[in-house]
Image (cartoon, rainbow, N blue to C red; front, side, top):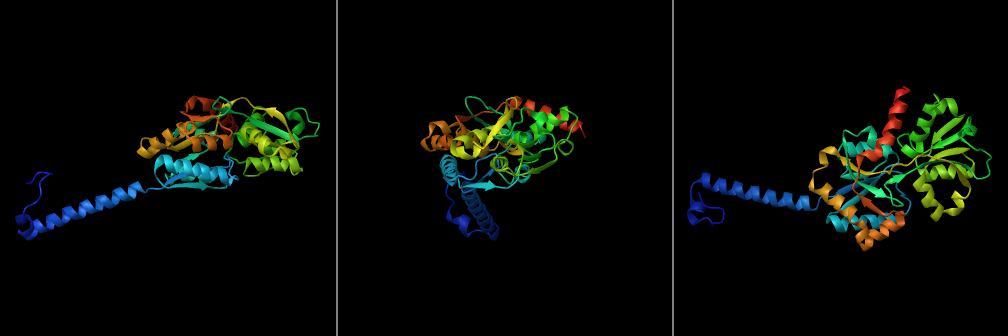
Length: 300
């Protein structure tokens, strides 16, 4: 048999039909391998975004896509859906490379998901949930919200649902027993709009989103006020399916996110997001969310 670096002589080409078929088979295999390599090189990275993300800013989305495309040297598709559940389903079924999700879906599916990175906001990988009311409302505490029309963000949102749901569980109450009516807006901005406009008398919202909106849409947030801050909880993370955690693309994505603050385009993205950086994630920062989830589950 010829060595790997040797060229076949004429007898290899003019010999038996078996030799010719072997040669053609090897050639076909090499061609297929070449095509496979090119296909892999052009593999699209599908990055999911939930309503945690401030998705209404087209410049932000374009800058994020440009940064990831340059860093990963792959086409990047930003996948947006209306609900957390839709993005989580795509993530668990490996139809997404990774996604920016919420801490609540992460703790729900902790055995099937792996943390890729966590945002750092105001020096910490943490944020709070806010209970908000109209600016001129006289309410002083959570007890004053009994019987309200209350706006939640999403049934799989930590800050926009679980935190308030756990607070009610501590009181042996549920949203149905405590509020006169409640509804889901499927977006934290929409919670603020609902409370500001009077459509809702109170709302549960992501504190990070409210604070960013205070910079970007001050007239809207000025029509609301914060009635209650939750404790500090793990910031909505970037996650992937556990089965993909050791893939080259997920490792490259992690490095790209960690590198963002050192890159001009990356810094622009962080500035628009009002974030300091992305950093490696410690699963323990989500223990507080997990405890709330366990409490609500214990209520049945």
